Length: 175
Image: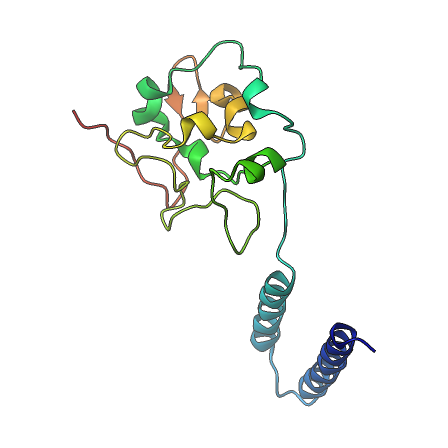
């Protein structure tokens, strides 16, 4: 038996033993509902570490050939209203992005654009709201149109933004 097969079998046997012990502790009344919820959360974290969710944008073949949205949006003039909240969305990279090597990705969630602790993309300039890798931005960013996205606008034409999601910060341009 190969070592990887042996390791997988050993982990499966250990998981079975731990699950049996947990069931016995629960039957004895030693583990309460709070303990069980915590164990479920831990199981989910372990599963993500063992096999992180991999997502690749397979719809974008050539991001540089992506058609525009028809009418371009003047993001620079709207940033103080929308606060670039689209830069807080989960964005998957394409095979082209990975091959170019111009964009980094989240190690714990392969091939998603990384975000900082404030929830925004690492490439977003927090002063201007602009994209620091605009020429190399992913296809999903190139084709996104915020005008009908209710997470951004209650009414785009009237320039009425949706409430800012908790944790996101307001961008105030200087100058």
